[in-house]
Length: 157
Length: 157
DNA sequence: AATCGAAGTAGAATATTATTCTTTTATTCA
DNA sequence: TGAATAAAAGAATAATATTCTACTTCGATT
Image 1 (cartoon, helix red, strand yellow):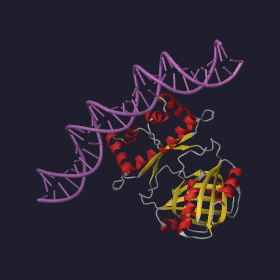
Image 2: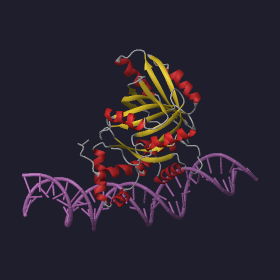
Image 3: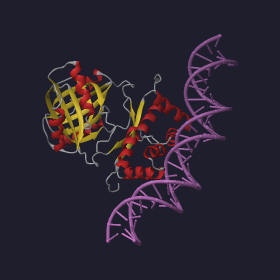
């Protein structure tokens, strides 16, 4: 990781293009940016080395694969010792259903986001896996019936 | 979009590799899979055409760019007419801070996930933007102090 | 068991792209 | 203004993607 310099409009445009399609060619980008391939190539490498581009990934359509179910679970603890919190995080993150685990302020200690096949799997997940973890006082569930993503093409920097 | 056939282990391995690094070369994949480039190439194209690979994207490190703040807001409505809900979604999704908007069951109507620079921006977001939308009865905020992603490399299919 | 066909694969040939290198053009700043 | 620095162009090379043809493998059918 190198130090980070301020991004100019070209850098931001590059990030936007790569966010829209990580497999876009340098040639195509340079056409859109009215530059030759060299500066585009070098800027991409800099953004990668600076860690601004963390990685490239394929976004899988999980619905097509039968996982139609996203849910949020709010979890509150009985005891708030650091050890128990760490143990909780460890065990939660090891579960394959768990996508994200947020430590939050507000009317819960953690919000976890999970993905599953159906209601049945959710029931099993909560009763067997979540309540199998000690120290959980309360779980509140929110099943997502429909998600929409923010539609700003522009990077909000 | 073509019809979807059952995925075999090779397909799943391909999806895993592309999820880890969307810019991996077909050659590198074929080495790891003990295949020649042709079958790997063709399988990728099929997965794309079937829509199982939705798209490829660059994951940006927003923290490095100064956006250190992720939050969830739970939103409850006064009135639940379809028109008002659609209007809400439209306006919410147009806001650059909004990443996801989930229509949920449970003790809220919507959960939105947002990203901002700091607390100040969050205050402005809630008072100016959210409460500028009519029909909102209640907003409950959860500020994420720390996120961790599920650490399963394996695709959970 | 022999044959057919489909699906999958290998390997070579070609087209395209990434990457490096050298030279030229802008920018910055003393 | 004029050096010093950074950015960009353009050409050359290395690597990869993509296409094409031909060869297996396997299951179904007779």
